[in-house]
Image (cartoon, rainbow, N blue to C red; front, side, top):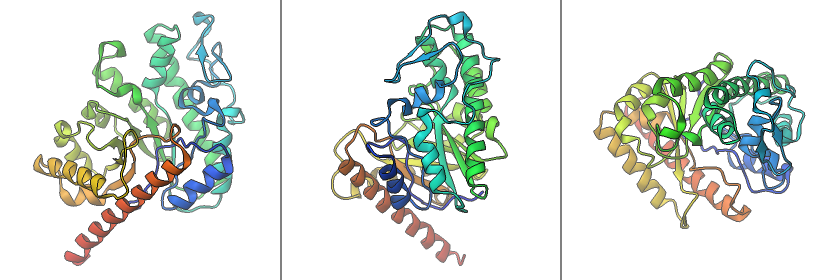
Length: 333
């Protein structure tokens, strides 16, 4: 599978209160690589964790997305999830999006919660760590397969990029993770293996983490904000790029004023690339195997802010594309 060089895409959640408008937005603004959106402002069950936990037997999900476990002993990782056809409320916008892209032959991005983040949520809800992570691993693997089953039925000729979202990894290994480095790698690699051979795979983390652990799990793509402490892992990133790996750069900030022009975002991205090049990363591969995204989801923004974020993302993508084309022309490609 080949991703579009330098293409803009998104991280998932949008602030729209209308599903058709949300789907129209991503298809119009990121046609090269649209990402299946969610609209948690309209439907709280489309938040990442309720989506991931939906169908786990013995678990209660309230209409606002709150999760509780009345009887932890009833939660069994060997019991398949309910709703394998994704007919429930958490998946309504996904279903609409997949219907709209039926027949597409260019890549599409799908994103869902990763097993570590779901496991941490289950621990907070009352499960012991070993059971929580076993349940999370089984649930995420099945849900990823269910999502691809639905996607392939709806649009059988479409290449898929499936990204597992792991905000629980922010900060790297911490005591509350209740996992060793090998445990983190096993959880992530199990999720990736659930769709291996059917999709290009990725891991997204919205802040600094131990990127070497993420890369050891074997994704085809990593998705990270610019400035997410990636330079210490430059050697691993260099090898990852040389093996054909891709990086989706969250180069457009979503938690502070953005400004009217892309110059600040471009300086920050270029500065990140310079640091990596100084630490052995290939400057051509950094650009050729790059996507650009907002730093995080946009559910907490308003629609005008979201439009501006996507506009800056598009303009950055055009800069990357122009650089890549300039490199190809300079070597006669």
